[in-house]
Length: 161
Image (tube, rainbow, N blue to C red):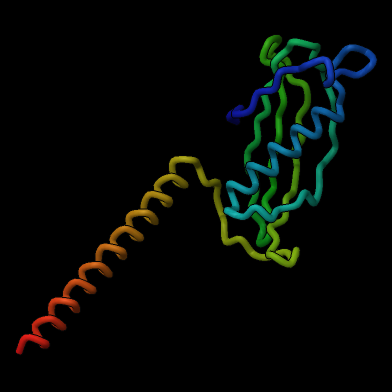
């Protein structure tokens, strides 16, 4: 699992015990997981459907840096299932693991819609798809310009004769 997001535990993130408030951590996890699901499904309209049991095994204190790791474990027809792991970067201790977080892909009306994904999309694949789209668009634009120039030339030739 790759840990892409780091959070710095600040005073406003603490509970009365002086450790990381679980609600703050869960908000961070849900946000990071939603962003991951959005990137995987190419759709900003995703919602959290289910989060499995959460078992805090350690915590973090003010000034600690925590790392959040998310990975896709399953692709359903309209959903993606993720696994989340959080660890303390300073102590290297696991803080919690969430085995199952399910996000559902929605259309503009908020109705579940198939996403067509079957495997994890990595950043380099997404970039390559973007690059190909840009190239295809540039090629189409150049072709349209060339066709227009040809039509202009033919039109001018026809008016001369």
